[in-house]
Image (cartoon, rainbow, N blue to C red; front, side, top):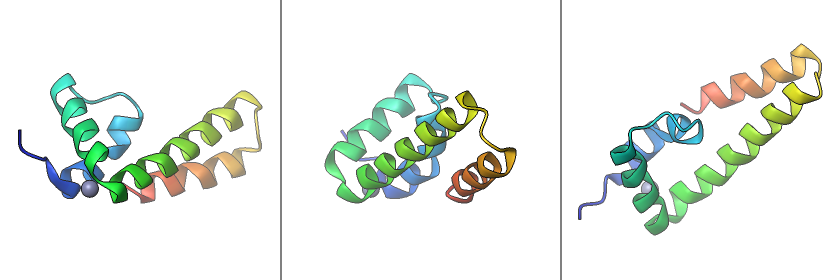
Length: 77
Ligand SMILES: [Zn+2]
């Protein structure tokens, strides 16, 4: 098995967080993150941000706050 590498893992992290990857890519990224502290760290940060966005949407937070979080998310892509 070959490691897909940090570039691919980071490029597809957003899709990974949103469950938009194919099963094959999903497995590649999961495998990579299991062996790469840097990317798994990145993933954890992404998870927290995603959770905050979902919370903000549920609580109908000010659109401004939601936009700020969303732009941080897209800036990571
Ligand atoms: Zn990595």
